[in-house]
Length: 69
Image (cartoon, rainbow, N blue to C red; front, side, top):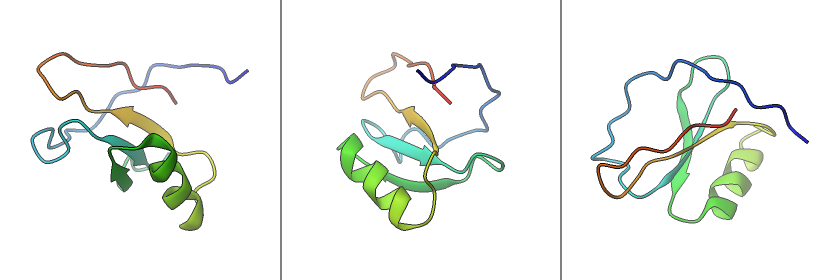
């Protein structure tokens, strides 16, 4: 099981990514892939060479989710 840890997230344009999953680069937290289907986001990130990106779910409302690294 992967260990969870709390990280300081950079500002993300939540209006742009509302209701989507983001795959973030581990060091810079740059968005490397995004979309509404988590499996597709993970597949795209892996194709780009990122096997274990940070995953962040952007809520479709003003409710916020916790990011898991």
